[in-house]
Image 1 (cartoon, rainbow, N blue to C red):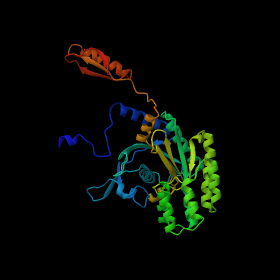
Image 2 (cartoon, rainbow, N blue to C red):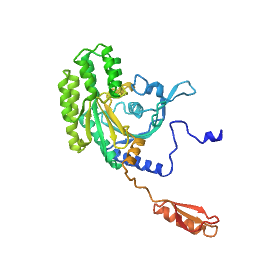
Image 3 (tube, rainbow, N blue to C red):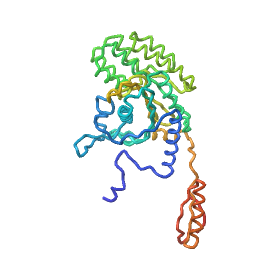
Length: 380
C-alpha cells in the first residue's frame, strides 16, 4: 500500500528541480509578452458546473470530462478548457461593457481520456481572450500575439496554420447538409480521414459538384494563391466573405511583420463547436502535436447572456517545452543556490553572509555542518 502511494495516477506526473524551473521561466516569458499587448490576468475556478461545458456550449464531450458531485448533488467538472470559463466570467462581471476586453490566464486543464498516445491528462495552458471586438484587426492581433509570445521563448522553427470555419459552413449550407451531417463531416475532415468523409457524403446522397468540393476542402492549404482558388470554387456569399476576411487579416499581419509565420488550411477545423470564424493551430519542429490553438467564437458568450464577439488563443506549455528541447533552445537558468555550512560557533557569521546574499538577490541556504562536510561557503 505504501509503495502504491508513491506513484501518481495514469496521465499525471510530478515536475520538480531544473525541469520545473525551465517551465516557470518559459511560462513567465509567455505571460510578459501577452501582457505587453494590454491583456489583464484573470483566474477562474479549477472546477465549474457541468453546464458550462455541456454539449450545447459546444466544448469537450461529456465522456472526456472529470465529473463529480457536490454535497447539494450538483454535477461539477474539472475544467477541460479555459475559454467557456472566461466567457462565463466576462458575462457575469462585464455584461454591460462594450469596449474591448482583454484577459489572459495560466493554469491546469484536465481531460479524462483513455486514449493518451503520449499526452497528459493534466496540462498547463497559457492563453489570451479578446472580447467585444469583431474586427479584422482583432484577429490579426491575436495571431501576432501568438507569434511574438513564441519568439520570446526562443522558439525559432514554427508555423501558424490558419483556417476559416465559415468557409466550410457556407459550403455545407450551399450543399444542403443537415447540421449533424456537417459536424460529422467536420470531424472527418479535421482528422484528414478522407475515406470516411467520402463514405459519409455518399450515404447522405450529396450530389456533385458539392461532394467533390467538400472533399477538396481537406487539401486546401498553402499561401494566398490557395485562397483565391478556394474562392473560385464557391458561389455562396458566406464562404466568399470568409475568404475575403482571411485576405484582409493577412494584410494587417504584414503591418505586424508576422505574415511570414502564417499559412492557410481551409481543412483546419475543430471538434469544439463554438468556433465561428478563423481558427488556427501552431506547429513547431520537434513535436507532432500543436503547441498553440485558437480561433474566433462570436456566439459563445450568448450562452451566458452576453451578446459579444470574441477571439482567443491558448499555448500548450508542455508541448512548447518539448519543442524548445527538440530545437536545442537554451533556457537561461538563475544562478545556483549558495549553500553555507555552519557550526554552533560560527552560526551568526554564516547567517549574516546568507542575509547579505539574499539582499543581493542571490538565493542562499543554511545547512548544519556534519562530519566530513566543510563549514565554509559552497554551492550546489
